Picture 1 (spheres, one colour):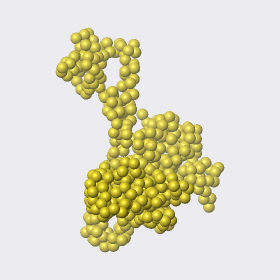
Picture 2 (tube, one colour):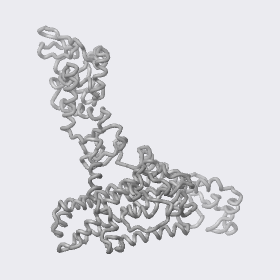
Picture 3 (tube, one colour):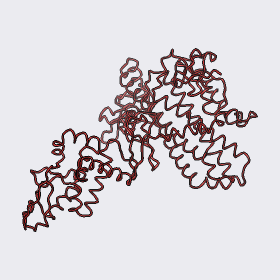
Picture 4 (tube, one colour):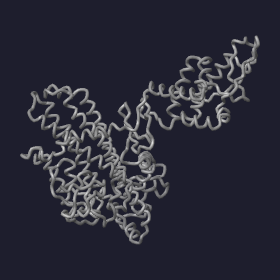
Length: 591
């Protein structure tokens, strides 16, 4: 049962929501735009955000770009080492397309490198005879029908085509093709492939070589989206692994799963495995069924009396509570809806272990279901938001431009709002995976996390409602409406503050909420600062401390707000004795 302080906290949040929608915010008050101070600085903030987003640590590569990069690397190695392009390609393929690695190894020990990759320093010329015998089919052919690698082992054109075709059909291993002679390790390069192979095999070989440039290079990866042919070149050591491909798919460079900030890759792997594993099925069976005492098959009872009959061929009749034979039950044991034997045995502790295991499984299942349902719901909401964004870009924006007599270039704030909604839904979705794996014993962190999560969800819902329902009024209007500019200011402002809040939330969770200590730690957040951050009118609320009651329960206490100050940059609440924010190290403005 929630404590009295929790009820007051909920009322404070509800009053903030009521103020936001009832017009008591500065948007609808006589104070002009006082409640939306962020709108005045929107141009500066947007420039900072734009410049930050432009500092991408990756490059999207099309097939043309990949081939160009590949050709440049081959030419560079060929020129520096004074070798043929085919030999340079073999070297790069062997060293995973690392130009610096090729140079280092070549100049350190050229002889060993040549031996490892099958490049002969002094190629052997084919015998100058009128007819030669093929080393595979042993037929005699004219000299001009025979071909050889650098080793001088000659084979007829038909055998070469068969050998190359078989190797290419076997897969990418054809890129390391050697001479057909079993005793020879001379490399067969792309120049011979282009001369001897069929057009179909040459095309396959070219595709394998292109894919090798991406898949064997530690700096590049394919976009994992189905049907996408773009690749990504990543700057290693840049910290943020989020990548947005030109196909609009967002994924994590490190694990190639969908983008999942603020959750780390290890947690994502555990969460995905848990969603697909059989362990939750076993938990459900353990929590909601009992084994037949005779055949041990699990039986679920969802209604009716305690008299259970197992399915054929077993047909064993037993009591659901004590699992004893039904023939030993009757009116003297409590009838069909009770069991005296079970109650007496339970008092003696006979069922303690089995009941404990069943209760643990039930609690575990309920906890997992709680987080999974919300994770899946936000995923569905994100998909819906993506569909609404597409509809806005292709249909509604033009309609709104006509109805409100506004050029489409002046309506980009609506697209920005929908893009932010999509991104926030993704972040909010993964916060539930974060919360599931947050240790139960870290009560202060869990309480603070749940508060931040609730505030984020509340702010996102405000933005979503404004972009969806309030916008519909202007779409349905027959003539331009005078307050459209007010709506523009409101939606742009909500987009800005929601973006800032979620960016702060992601940073806080990525650092593991490290500034939230034990129950005697200092204050971590205030509803006043959070409501400002989400665009609501400021009200004095309770200050959340490490021991404040939350949904997970625990002691509660209030702090003297006069001894605290809220950071303007990250909204972290600090003691007044310090002039530097303990979360972001931003100095307090004393003017």
